[in-house]
Amino acid sequence: MRFIGFIILLSTLTAVQAQESGYQFSPLRQFDSIEPTDNTSTYGKLKYSSVFSNGHISFGGSYRGQYEYFKNEEFSFSPNRENGWYLQRLLLHSDIWFNDRFRLFGELGSSLISGKEVLAPVDRDELYVNQLFAQYNSNNITIKVGRENLRLGSQRLVDPREGPNVRWSFDQVSINLRKGSRDWQAFVASPVFVQPEIFDNRTFHNEEFLWGFYGNKILTGKHHLDLYYLGSHYETAAYALDTGEEVRHSLGIRHWKTSGAWQYDNELIGQFGTFGDRSILAWTISFNVKRYLNERNSLGLKTEVISGSTSEDRLGTFNPLYPRGAYFGRVARFGPSNLIDIHPYWTYRNGKFTMEIDYDVFWRYSRIDAVYGPAMNIVLQGPSERRFLAHQFGTIFNYEFNPFVVIELETNIILPGTFITDTDPGAMNLFHSVLTFEAKF
Image (cartoon, rainbow, N blue to C red; front, side):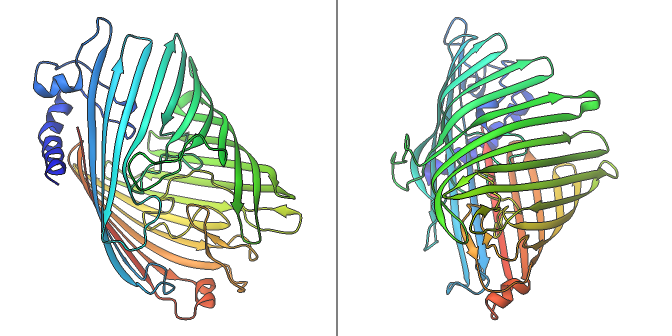
């Protein structure tokens, strides 16, 4: 704990200096912008040290502490209806550029939890290699080999899973080509399976694979167009009626813009393939439109239709592959499969303070399919033919002491709908809150 306290203090004291020195930190630290405007101070030497004639070495890290509280975590399905726990995640990295072409990036992680009785795999991993990859640059081509947190597009299908305590890592080979306004990436990857002890994660296995390509083109007026294909293989996948081997192909198109008074992020994905003896035909369409009323206020509307259904010869359940864990907020009771949702939200910003208030309403897409969690686990299944799932009310309060020291409080209340109350007449309202402190250096 003393070491954790030192990391917090170091991050707090150096964040302002980092900002003034031109260092820009990214959510994935391999994409940090390290400009050697100050390499004379102790912190400057930590961030940029010219140990090679044509290269440099940089160190950094982050600490995230969270207190999470649930009341009626599974509505009324769980005997422990009120519970709270503390999560902490420490990431430390080193970035070595031998010259303009060769790079080695490594990041160790430690994710701990206290106060929780039944742990999920994403809750604890005492010590692990989060990222470790070699990179080669040549003109407009970048080649990476090793372990990395992957983030593609809107993160609807592939995301580092920032919400949970342990991120997704993939052992992968990727090639990235940039030419003018176009950016293409092709890769083959295998997810790392989390184990709770020291350096015991399972890797180089044959249970799951992910491959594909992702392309982005910048259009006129700061509009972007993404086109992509993702292939996935699961040795054992589970849906409402059956389990079996799955090979799935996802084709997607995304049109987005994140500047100006009107902003949007719209996406259409179709999926086909095989699940055991069944064929797969699934899809999703999503819209996210935001309007800035002035410098401080914006209004937005998200809505998604995500297919579901199963039969003797066809599977219509959409598989979100490796999405962000907090798909509909940190409460994460429902995952993006067999779902319809309408989600208006209001955001207010004033200096270092940001507040968001949102409302989400959920229905099942198919009456004969289950309700799934973010990890594609079945969370609700019953004889009821009702579609209506729940109302969800949420708030987020965020304060940046400076760009790299942040505290945030998120709360959610879920009111069960008719499908849930038919499944369990004693279902109760769910309350969730999570208080987060994060510091980077």
